[in-house]
Image (cartoon, rainbow, N blue to C red; front, side):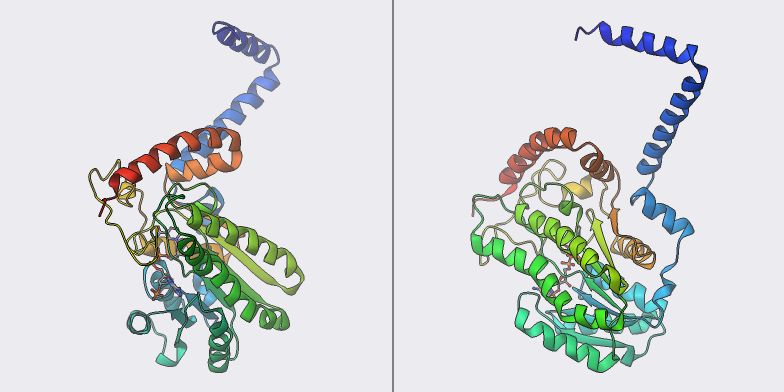
Length: 354
Ligand SMILES: NC(=O)c1ccc[n+]([C@@H]2O[C@H](COP(=O)([O-])OP(=O)(O)OC[C@H]3O[C@@H](n4cnc5c(N)ncnc54)[C@H](OP(=O)(O)O)[C@@H]3O)[C@@H](O)[C@H]2O)c1
């Protein structure tokens, strides 16, 4: 199409709209609506539905007296969730590998809320050791007699290119993030079906909605979580069990520092040559994209209290990119392949050769 024909089509279009005034008002209102929606997304740190529920929906105090099992509770988002839930009066089971850190989080919960020591149980759990999960679940059932909510939050990130990553490192990420969550869920799902109630909340990621260069296996594990737990929702639909998938963007935590690299035994130092251009976890800080763990936990609990099925928690411009990947997938794939290639190159540059 010749370039000049585009304004001509526009002028003809406007003439038609002016002739049929009803259409004119309809079109203008439609476009104003879209503009308003986009402005709203720019001003938000979560998807539009979640923001609506934050204003008008149920508050997290619905968790008072509920028994909530949080995996990955020893730091970051899990720790913030534990404190926020304790403040609502929930009873907690805190799990991860580091017992000392879990005890520290328990102490924090007791200090910052009115829960009693008996209301918070520490259960050491390694997501990779599937054969120990049933025992962990039984310990929790023995203590509280029930589990109302499971939050699958434990996870590790990944910083490495695809062809230099060993299959052992890939397996580790998939086992920790995906199979670990599946295994823990399988241990309590039969009880939830029997009691005809329950809620499973899965902390996936924005990387579970769009490709994430130099974190391919991490991205696969988080896409996998959404696929698996969407299916769980369908299978237990008649048992009054809710499933909520959470997709946060970058949040302040130790996730970048603890990320798995090419091999499990050796870590390369990531150089910070230029914090904005290099893919080292600092870029997000440079763009002021990082969210606090407290705010992320607050929004997760709004989503959970309202039993939302999937939420995106992030600031623009990343939030806009998630919208684009959902509603304009062809455009998104075109751009993401080109930008992703640049990101992968920058990542290579930021790795030291030692
Ligand atoms: N921070 C972000 O930017 C971000 C963005 C999107 C999604 N997420 C997701 O949010 C979740 C929490 O991450 P975070 O940001 O809070 O990072 P974090 O501070 O590093 O927390 C990760 C948690 O997972 C636990 N964990 C790791 N490996 C485990 C294993 N094998 N078995 C049991 N627990 C294990 C860790 O505890 P131990 O070391 O004590 O085992 C820790 O409590 C993760 O699933 C992550 O993928 C994070």
